[in-house]
Length: 133
Image (cartoon, rainbow, N blue to C red; front, side, top):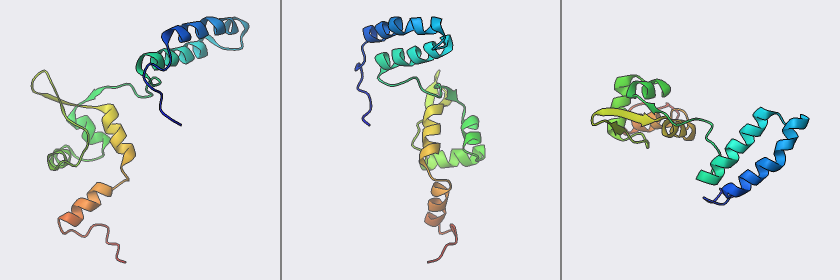
């Protein structure tokens, strides 16, 4: 399935569909909450080219990111300094460091558990997983 192209769905089409389906709410075929959910997603698709994200974007502190990644704060800082993470730090207001939660979660979902740790241990000459072939 191909991703939606930006502006593939025009806002006028969303408005027309909303007016056509509105009578279904009155008959009980569709609840008001379902109607609003469907059309808020369609409006978002028309405006941004993709459905409303399941996770709303939010800035996280370095401590919150370390907690999400299940590492200590000092270990997180060392790993970040090594360039172990694809997500970027954001400077807010000059010197406040934050990370976008959606980027951190995307990284967490894309990396096999322990992959980075094992490769770093091997690079340092550590035992790694101890698997011998």
